[in-house]
Image (cartoon, rainbow, N blue to C red; front, top):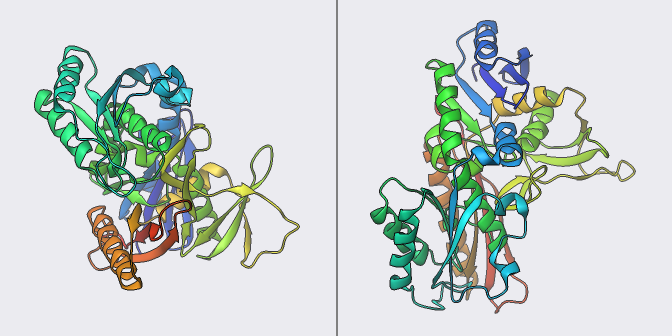
Length: 402
């Protein structure tokens, strides 16, 4: 592998490193990203193959501290009936709710297994499209009940919105998978709110890259190409934790370990398998809201308990570890779905189908065709559901295209 650059863009300080294989060749930091990037490129012994940037600090800063600068979001829920309690009309987390300028409910939706609970109300949908068109919001978030199993109503709503407002940017929940209305709604709202700002950040990054192939780190520790992040910017949220785990493992020369991170008020640990951080959908550290997209699974450190794998202590600067993890990252894809099976043979077919779709996504993200491997697959029964209901998770990682 040639030289790769990892860069972490923060609201204040920016850091960058140059890495080849497991060796750290150069590192630098400062407050002027363009100058810093030029300096790290000059420090490389040969022209770098690629730049991978972590934008998670900037994205979190926008959501937490500069939310008034983000795009106003119109939120559409597709449900069998609207909430009657005002508390249920809003999102439980203020960090999400304050991004929404107006809420709408369109009757419709499906159940967990994709069975239609109520036909989509096209009259109500036309009225909602007309009302949104009269307002300022052109970033629209859509979440429908049951869309992970059957996205038809979300797609029909998105088509109607696009026909009424060709300039609208529409985020739909089924593109992210996951479960739970609150987490899926938070994901599409953040995605819609960040769309404009993320586009500006990516424009600046691509100018600074000056022709060097440029990728963006995602929350699960992999990366996506800039064109995909322009439409799905929420994928870049929360990436730093996974990158720090992977950076520590990379410098320790191992792909399988448990990493101890020096955090306040208490140290945290996270696992690395096959060079990738262990991840799960959860509350994103710093944001205080759960998302449907996965981020690093960190737990409080218990140094008294012996582990089954090597323990690596991350004793370098956190920003430097983030950059190393970004430079060493790979194109990835993640699927998290509900399925219904009646036999073992059907289970194998569902696994193969999910793996094939995840592989196609990883290839579209920049993996060399044929290089994508399944690094994680799980099928577990969904509790308190009819027999045969399973949750399927697949994670795929590939080798970057040369």
